[in-house]
Image: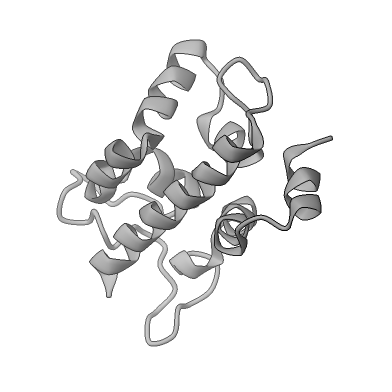
Length: 132
């Protein structure tokens, strides 16, 4: 049984499940797919524009893996260590993380998967605070 089905069957934390779903759908609230209310559509990351040498294309993967503006949030939530482990294993961190797999391509236990949802919520909140 996959983690997504287990989550549905157990009726687990809605906010954690919703966060994972949003990241699976390329995180529309970031504003790179369509404009956020009161903002223009972002082509480049507004959060790290003053920190990067050149403008960085805005994507979920950018925020998840490389956005300098939310580096501390990635480190605090454990996302940074997951990304480093995936880089060492030469596997794609973003899709494994939101898909519930570890760097060895094995499914993680449901509680860990839900913890990832909480970490993604913290990362998203950190990023959105910077552009508000």
